[in-house]
Image (cartoon, rainbow, N blue to C red; front, side, top):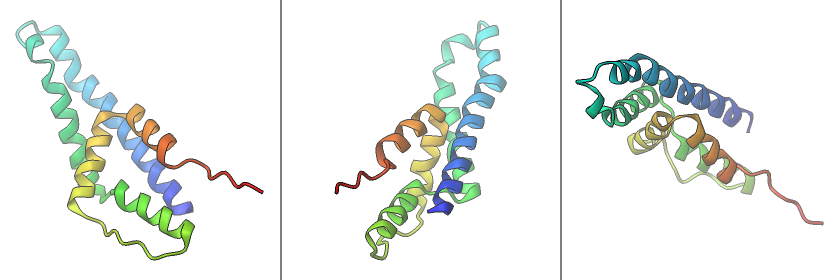
Amino acid sequence: MLMAIVYLAVIFALAYLAESLTEYLFGIPFDKIPALTPYKWALMYLSAAVGIGMAIFYQLDLIYLLAEVISEAVGVPSPIQVSVVGFVLTGLGIGRGANWLHDFVSNYFKKPVIEV
């Protein structure tokens, strides 16, 4: 479980970096150069590509992580292996930025409620 927290911290940091650096490096020229302004929508795809590149480079797979955490909690082996699809989905999340990942974690990594 501790490894999952480290994994998520790295993903959050990369999401923040991908979002803020893409906006800083490419967003400003799109705002300041009138010829580029109509194409500002392309920043979304650039950010997604940066996120996918980071996920593949660092071998980050949120789907695998989620399966590992759940399987550890219920005591069964995980049926999910690290995959390219997981890297791409994680990269898309990283490219979306830290807010999307915060939503993901708050929805899927809730602290279990133990009823007595």
